[in-house]
Image: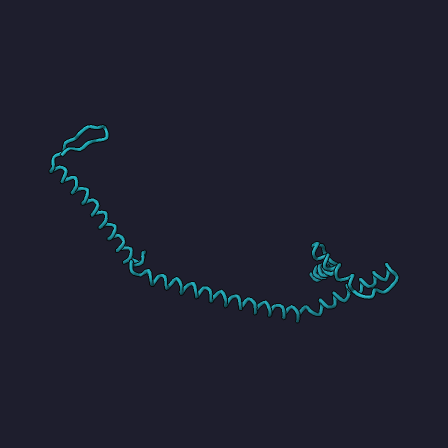
Length: 156
């Protein structure tokens, strides 16, 4: 047989040599395929890779894990909301009276300031509350916050 190279040279090959080369190539291909299969089987045996037919079971397990995770998230969210309600209740019970007293003192101070400035008693507290909201939005300290900080500092 003859074979033509890229350089346009014709190479003649003995049919026996051609058969040997083809056999050699095929043995290499089959050997690599067999090695790959044995490697996959070994990985399945030691648990590093799932069996080829276990994909349905894996998909079911993934769905099951997903459902369990979502259920646990819902339980944690519910526990968080319950704890938040409990915390609000505890704060109201422990600090509610003090907060009411501080707000009452602040309103009394505001009314006194209004009387000093305008020489008359205000009809409503409408001027007091927008002032407090504006202070919170601007991020500056209100009189109540300053008093709280001073009390905490004095108690230490």
